Figure 1: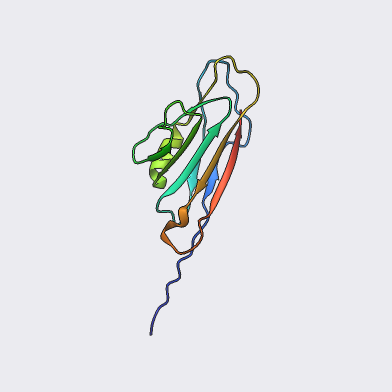
Figure 2: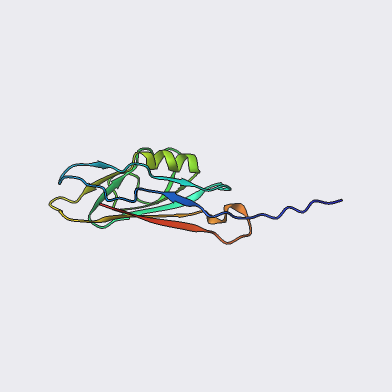
Length: 130
C-alpha cells in the first residue's frame, strides 16, 4: 500500500477595511484590521502602494524588501512569513503627501509564490479607500 500525497496550493485571503477611512491633512492614520490568511503559506510576497501619500509598516522584522524599506514609502514590495507580514500590517500607517486633500486609496496585493508546490502561485488583492 502506498499513499500518494498531492500538493495543493490554497489561495491567500486579505482582510481589510471595507468602509472608507478618514484622516485630517498632515496627520498619520493607523489603518485597522489588515491581515492575510493562507492555509498553506510558507512565505508570501506583498505589494502595497498609494498615489497620494506614503505608507509605513509597524515592523520590518522578518521581511525582505525588493521595493521600499517599510518607512515612508509610496510603494512597498516585500516577502516574509505570514506571522511577520501580519505583524507589519497590524501597524500599517498612511500619511498624505504635503498639501493633499481628497479621496485616495491604498492598493494591497498578496502572492503566495506557489508555497513550495508545483502549483501556480495564487494571489488576492484589496483596495482600502481613504
